[in-house]
Amino acid sequence: MKYLTIEGLPDLPFDVAESLNQLRINLGFSGENIRTIMVTSSMPNEGKSFITMNLWKMMASVGNRVLLVDCDLRNSVLVSDYNMRSEENMVGIVHYLAAKNGLNDVIYETNIPNGYIIPVTTNVTDPTILLESKRFQHMVDECKREFDYILLDTPPLGSVADSLTVAGYADGSLLVIRSGDVPRKLVANSVQLLRRTEVPLLGVVLNRVSTTRKGYNYYYRYNFSRYGYGYGYGYGYGRPKKKKS
Image (tube, rainbow, N blue to C red; front, side):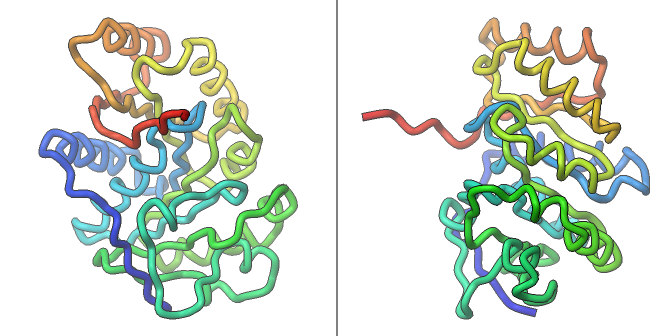
């Protein structure tokens, strides 16, 4: 198996790490059959990949063999943002789905003990055919035999339909919401889209929360009173938006 070094994972503040640990524990209560989990958001820059990467690390740290699959085939930034390096020529999920490489060629062991990853090393303009291929289903089936959990990091629901395609391979989904930044109607639309896939929505992750802001109470009422999903997490941390020049 190939080896990949991830140099860009930050050390988390205590409260952030504790919130992610609670998320990990609650996901464990979802049931033994919930092993392949899709993580998505409504818009870009909500911290979806940050949550996925650090949840993956947290799950691996307690002894689970966890595979992170980057499913943003159009515009992935994980390799660059988290400074992923390999001494070998890096190939990823696109190469496997296009039948250019075998599955073992694209699964990388990492410097995170028990943490494995299938990266995106080549972006494609229209990945629909690749995501709907039998090779994707075969990948998930084979990896379920080797790993305790699989995390699928997918594009935002409001941008492209890729996440809805990937949802068909998952046992459950998580919706990441950036506090105070996403309109209520857009969140409701994302929830409805996920419901149509008939894949259980395991919960929502409320990211970059300031508990002193009115927006916190707004999202709290929205997430728990209207839909009643079991979790809501305030992280106060995430990938900041890039300022326009």
